[in-house]
Amino acid sequence: MTEFKSISLGINLSFCVKRWVTPDLWAPIVQEQLGLDLVQFSFDLVDPAWPEDILRDCARDIRRAAGDHGINVHSAFIGLAHYTFNQLLHPDPRVRDVAEDWMKKAYRFAASAGIDRVGGPLGAVASRVDGFEPDSIPERDYDDLILRMRRLSEAAKEYGIVELYVEPTPMRREWPWTVEQAERMAANLADTPVPWKYCIDWGHATFQPLYGEGHGTMGEWYRRLAPHIGMIHLQQTDFQFDRHWDFTEKGAVIPEEAALQQRQFGLADRPVFIEVFYPFERDDASILQALGRTTTILKPAFA
Image (tube, rainbow, N blue to C red):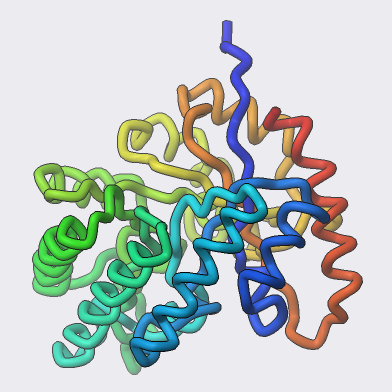
């Protein structure tokens, strides 16, 4: 019989991009309007490459606002802005060097803001001119990626980061995008100073155009990667695209079943973060209303 255990529910600050961009804006929304006390910071709100005096003040403000509102900033993820670059898999190794240095700066900022976990997708190889997408990235790119991840783990340890995350994406040009690839990567990184864990996203792992109907379920990811999973990203989606809808939208994810599945695979102790994005032109009031309704829908399932 599956043990009924409460699952920590939080929210990624992706909904704040270009809107509630400072802690004095997002902290009261999270606490008072959404009734949550767990967040995942987004580097769409602070670029770790900004000047040192700005970063110092941003880190101070995050610590203060989180403390004032009783919020635990569990982790920091790279966000959309940096994700749009090819990062650690760019064809030019000099750009990979820049991306690696950016991540080190992200670790440094996170630590100064009182955040001791950092993660996100790793990067993407360039597309071919004929449009063909192989089933895996070249081995030389994979080997280089693992080497850089090892160096990043060493840097993270120096800054006091306790856990790093890889977020698998449903694209053949990124890594990893299959359970098998994720298992291989976990084995290749098993002895790093700071452990690399996975963030499994409901809109990524269930993407039917890539995995096929019934072959990209969360169950397979949970069953085979359970020891390596550090958190879950939750969104409403239709399994046809990576939608990142809130739960006022009609989709294929049923909250009660999502929570039950997480418990069944022994993952009830891993936090869940709502990760939703909105068109920049959408009005602020309707977003707050939709987020409030979303948390009202989700809380009973994960409590």
